[in-house]
Amino acid sequence: MKKLNLNESFISRIWMNPSNYGELKTTEGKNVEVLSYGKPNYDSGADFTDSLIKIDGVSYSGDVEIHCSLKDWKLHNHTKNRKYNRVILNVVMWGEDKDDYKPGTLKRTIPTVVLSEFLNKSIHEIWKEIINNPVPASGLPCSDDIGKLDREFVRDFLNDLGMERLKYRAGRIKQRFDTCESEQSKDSSRVVWEKILLEFVFEALGFSKNKTPFLKLSRMLDTEKLSVHCDSIEDTDAVLFGASGLIQQDRDSYVSRIKAKWSALNKELRIESMDRSEWNYFRLRPVNFPTLRMAYASGFLYEIMKGNLFKRIIFCFKNSRDTMKDISNLLSGINYSGYWKTHYDFGKLSGTVKTAAGQSRIEDIIVNVIIPLVYVYSREFRNEDLFLKMKKFYRTEEDRSDNTILKDMKKHLGLTPGSICESQGIIHLHNFYCTKEKCSECKIGEKVIDKFSVSDAIREITY
Image (cartoon, rainbow, N blue to C red):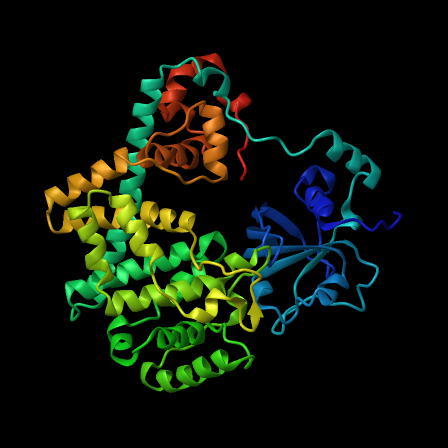
């Protein structure tokens, strides 16, 4: 077979269609069976995550990497990159260098499949099939019929789903609250609530790409200890950037100062640092770099410890005449180090002064963290007045947020949500009904289900 310089996206399409090949074996002659291809990964790291592969009868769960040739593993510097430690299979198109290249990490060799050796069609035939069968566009099988339904019926359903979603998010917070209470029984109730607020806001600051490391970092922090040893925002900078592993070599006086502060503070705090490789920068604009988000997180942490932030948030729901405006002002007014108002990374100046957390991110935090937290807080203290004010705010406040799911679902539903609750209901509809093909359990689906066969018409919605 003539060797072609194929890109990895094309090879991935070949890999994900088992009709293109058969009876796979590794370069060492071991049988390979694909139990699950996993999920395509568009960030840094392996090309597929959460894959399940059986090699010589033994099942392995992890990542799959796609390459054009065996030498690409070394050329792409994967050997020392920790993001590739979970790779269980390396799939390459061409294997003319079997004896020269052995893909692997520092600790082990990665099993490899040379795909071209097992193809049952020519590359040209496969190419024609892929061109003629592009990835299906997103869509809902009931899109053509939703517009015929009563609008009030649809909105009532979305509001019900919005309350379901609020309870779902509140359930995560309640579960974490119970865990923290049992683990830290010596702490006051205030400390536990502040810790919950800190953890979930940190997670939200990470967006989808860095929420896991942000959450991990937040759970390493003892706010009671930090409150004793940190007297300034630059101190909390030192702790967060030091514990996160993001501090690089000395580049200016600010970096030198926080490195020195971290060294001194950690003698008391004894926090084991994370590794920089745990953080994602790939395909992020500078304004979304974890360093800028960390700067805001540092100011947020300082306000929790020194500014009674949790109590002030609760008071906004209790006493404010314009809850959204007052909480937004409270969160957007978080002070953080001046260095990060002119830099997006250590030693790297930003073209213009940036905010460490924009208005859309603050509104996301209010919707996805603050409201569910107040829900749990009001229930724990049986504060019916606070609960009703929170619920009224959720069901009447206009939602200005927007994302890919909302944009697409609003188009299919043919309506614009009138409140936070309706927007959250749309997201819940997408996540728990549409993408799971639960049309028969959906009130909209019940109305139109007899007009089409779900099993035939349903299409995968991918974002």
